[in-house]
Image (cartoon, rainbow, N blue to C red; front, side):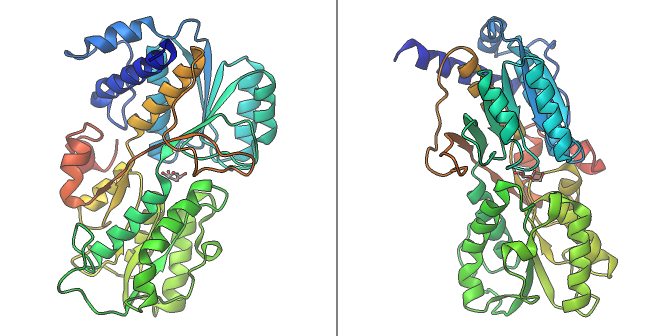
Length: 398
Ligand code: GAL
């Protein structure tokens, strides 16, 4: 092992140990770097006290504050970098593309040493990334790939195709077509079972991965007629949701209910929803026409993503069926590991060098795994890991 590999491995250990330290802060909390490390984490204390020599300022650009996940991501990245001695310029762009490009322009002008970016529109940052490259500033795409530019150095994310697979599997389980492990259920309903499909924002590279993973998984059931998309809207362009907005999903669901389900949802059994914000918009539309109010009382199975606290509370009350848990602390730790490698003259180690072609190059990536959360796994996955507390789940807010 050469020194560089050892340094990278050490950086990973530091970031990993820091995930443990940040647990008490959970997803909603800001992790205080002035807290003493918990007992048993002396490695963290001694390694992180060395930090990154002359780290300077790191620019962190996040899309919006309206989704609790990006707030959790921003807090986690910031606190973990600060623990290594860096200054962090963390900016949120209110889902407005010009705001995000201006924030990046400003960060580059101010002389940041590295950029970590969760983009709003994955194709809108070419000029900024060229300016960054001209100044030798490394760019890490965070969760969302940045397309159409050679100047993105690394991509940290979750396995986005697998997220879609997990969402579809959860829908099949909720519809009692499979058991919890994905095996065909012995007493599975014969169908046809009416469902509807939603996808994310068309300008977010992840949306296609989620949708393809889900559709590949649902295909056999759609092909043999067990599942039917009654509206006929099965193409990505027909089901995409602009800006990932709750209200856009709610409006589309309202329209589907009146055009296809007799205005009261009759017969609709399931909805593939790729993100908790959309799930809540869809559930609003369903309950507004008198469905439910819970799944046992006739509310369709609605999936989700991100384990947002508002949705975890709905899952706990049998209103939303599931979500996909993407542990933002781990993603932040991975981004910090990559940043540390670059800032100390090393090369970060990808675990995927094939999947994410951004139109200019295949971007070396590090993909993390995800978990599906149902009512019975809120405790082991979200509460026991310190992501949310029981009180937060009960209150439905961070
Ligand atoms: C995606 C992200 C999802 C969800 C969605 C809406 O890019 O991967 O986890 O957060 O944006 O914010």
